Image (cartoon, rainbow, N blue to C red; front, top):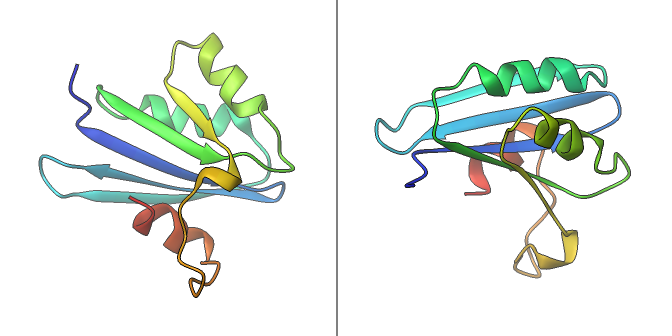
Length: 103
């Protein structure tokens, strides 16, 4: 299966920023979800036509979102912070920047 849509999530305790890139059309859909509502994040992900793949960085928020996604049959991966390639001079981006430009 070829993944057509890529979703980046920046998950924090107070909010989750997300962006979906449709590689076929070039369309980017971004959204910020206030609060720690896994249900609302998963509902937003389910609104996208499949196939898609989502990823977020492991951190203090843990793996709850990934576990809840797996229970719904959604493909949401968690990456380890140490495995994200960054140039030494690269600054930490804002939530929206991280989601859109991490591809």
